[in-house]
Length: 631
Ligand code: FEO
Ligand code: CA
Ligand code: CA
Image (tube, rainbow, N blue to C red; front, side, top):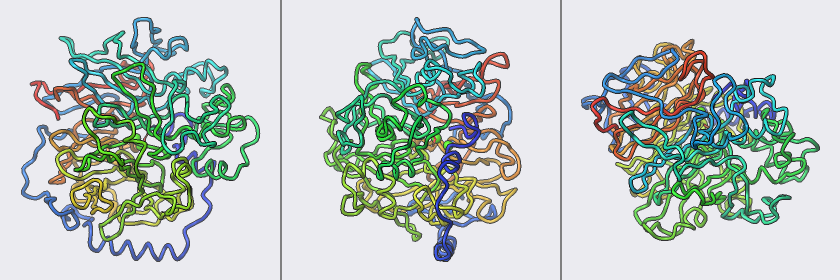
């Protein structure tokens, strides 16, 4: 998500402006923080000079960097500040698809100056590519891709400040977000979209879907148009994603609150109002102005509509007629992605983060086991949701969000999940972005991208955000990656050990812990880890969405980028740099693992077609020149 385009403020900043935090940190909390922080620094991760080795606090079985030979098949590339993509020697990249490229032969032509017209705007690759996954169906390769948000000024170039002036203006936004499903194929001229493939499909803010799980049918989900509370329209702010073991696509609804507003009075019902406060639903929205042209988004008329978004949505990419399902059992939060794992007994685990400053991490555990070819319909609706508590002694636990523990019923836990997690004292995190599960070891990782409010002000629910174990730095502008290993080598376990895989920082421009951990050096500087995937060989790919000014504390970091990390040695190398202004987000591989698909979201002025054409979010393909495996 770009920090400053649709509304000049980051989405977190916008929410804090509209919903000022209630309290400052108390004296007792400051003392407590000092104690826990001393414990952490004394025994866990070594910070500071380049000689310090992270290994003092690393998990058992994790080897320190020294003495390991590199597993990387490329030489690190330097930072860049230009307007294009760079990859190492021996690799090449090309554009697969751009915002506005056709999926069907009847799609409108892209206008280099004005973008996509409203007629047919649901027949093209939508805007702001994000999480994605490639599925193989027989000899076909189907790419499912999230389209996170719409750039208002770019899509309405003739409207001052990109403010909609008609229902059609709103419809352009609604059609250019959601999910794109498209067949892709590699020919003699490289990769391309298969126009008119029967798999091609757009899912927008108006696509019919169903709701299942504990909140389905609850009064809080009923609206004028849907008296059953089980039939929703559209999925929105689709950020990260994840494949299920049974071949479906999970798309995750993140900053849904900004699409709603009010033309009249805000709801006064206590439960609804408290939820709006915690999730940031207000009368003005973020400038999309849907509520002025589409009553569904006007909470003075339809106060329950925001309760129908903020979920993980399951889509069958192999059946264009299948109705997507919103799984309320996995909680309503600002979902980043959904990373599936299987417990040894076959139960399904889904790890998830809530990307807002000081919010929490979650785990889902199914009641039934996954059986290949069997019924999967209850695996994401019947089970238990947990929130993470990290202890400063490098252990942690998943706390079940049950009625007993939270004082809430099952439906309210599903709809107001943040409030439930606050009730059990979950650990406030530095903006949990993508989770990745290592396919070669029983462990998982989460990018904690940054949190300028750590130790400065509480989260949206008033929870203390003093520095804690995995979030050890106040006013954290750099971010870190936490790793956990479930006890018993079992993702179903309620307890785990944790450490920090890396703390980003700047050893040249900063002091103390802000220098970063010892696997950060002047050659591989980055900030704000966000996207993440671990390939079939166990190498971790880290994508950034941070400050690309290359100045001050960010000097030496350049444009946003993708790095590779070795989970075993801790070594990190820069593999790709994105164009100025972009974030690098979304990663998947071709069926033969010889092509990587990498998302370039909200690039700056000239990417990929030069100065005469509007900048266009794009998916690029990266291959080795010798066509060897890339993951
Ligand atoms: Fe859409 Fe948290 O990134
Ligand atoms: Ca992200
Ligand atoms: Ca981000």
